[in-house]
Amino acid sequence: MGIRLRTLNRSAWRPLSAVDAALNRLYGWRFNPLYQSGALAVVLLGVVSLTGLYLLLYYRIGAPWESVERISAQTWSGRWIRGLHRYASDAALVAVGVHALRMFAQGRSWGPRALAWISGVLLTGLVLLCGWTGYVMVWDVQAQALAVVGARMLDALPLFGEPISRTFVGDAPMPGQFFFLNLFLHIAVPVGMGIVLWVHVAKVARPTLIPPRGVWMGAVLALLALSILWPVEMAPRADLLRLPGEVPLDLFYAIWLPAVRALPGWAALASLVALSALVLSVPFWTRPRADRRPPPSQVDDRLCTGCVQCSLDCPYEAIAMIARADGRADLLAHVDPALCVSCGICSGSCAPMGVGPPGRTGRDQLADLRAVLSHTPPMPGQIVVLACDRGCGDPSSGWAPPGARVHPVPCAGNLHSSIVEQWLRAGAAGVLVLACPPRDCWNREGPSWAGERLFREREAELHRRVDKSRVRLAYANRRERATGDAELERFRVELAALDRIDAAGPVDPIRECDPVLEAVE
Image (tube, rainbow, N blue to C red; front, side):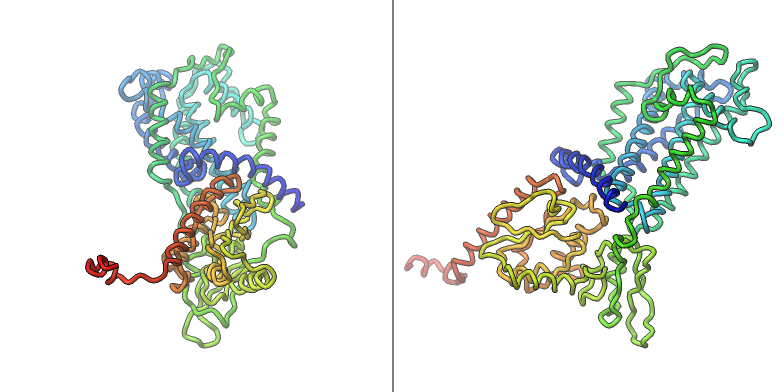
């Protein structure tokens, strides 16, 4: 089962990484909108809320269609605000779908991440419900079709004394209570969305809810231009005494309508429940077998100095500092197995190498490296590339640049800085750490912490005795082998320049700057 699931994850991941690579070439990894899909959805839902407040001022329960028509007739305000409200709603649903696909493709939906997945599914359901009630509020032919299907599904439940669908037979005017209920739900559901969003990020340290300014401003301005150039047209008013002919359907919130209109209410409801159950159960049927699940990090009490760095760096707040039982004054790191995802970032943060998943602590990494160096030390002038095995370091990617030696690592954040130093001491001309783009790290913050440790003296930092001009950090995903080649070539040129300076020998600044000596020479 575990092998089949990994194949399923990779099947979704491969085309996604190809699209990522294309957008990286277009926008750069910092502004790739797919990397920001979750945060972008939050911003777009905020735009929907703000524009909805304006629309609410002019909406009338007693005349829903007419009030929306008057809003659309406001050339300088209502027309484009309504369009922005509609298009931002659609874009938010697309962003949610992309975010969910990324989490599934990266296998980030089970174990300690199950709560985030389940709450994300519930959040998506609330977004759909909010969109449903919003479309019904317009009370055009699409709203009529949505309302009738919804009533038939509710009639399948033994909750009401009389069928709700009788409200839509046309023998009496639509009651105002129906539109009031829709309006109430349309306002109340976003409050529930805020609560579920808090649950969604509750187990994540330093959640990013706002994308870079260029991303969210670009998205909002693009939707604003679309709402001005292509305003939302009014569909015909709902008429319960007439069967609607061709019904214009929203591509994102109502595209499923033709498939269920012909079904009995119970069948449509059963299909919805079955689909919801399937998506909600993803954490259970995607988790690997027990013998294939990566073990959580462990702490060696003898080595832990209580520096708290591993606790600060953990992306999932799985490490807490507790009082020691042996009477020592310093604190002791404690890993909660229920929260640990075995990312190994704590291994790179521990200077004495006393914490990390079994087999991946800093001491384990050093032991593995020494075994490699005892058999195959680096060739003179060779560059060593420590590449993330989910990026260019993936063995199946086939990346083998000439003149370099590629070693896959589980994550750039898992890499202990002493490994870089040991490669240089063994004779490597330089070490290129090739990580996944920071916003696409499977472990969230691996590339960020790697850069801080290598160049900004974050614990456990690369020692000052190491020549950092011979160390580089770059980013490339699995499909960006050309980017990896370019970064490697750029690094090779820089190293060649350093070698020429070293070969020139020491320089005497006094002699070099003395015009008399210079004239004599």
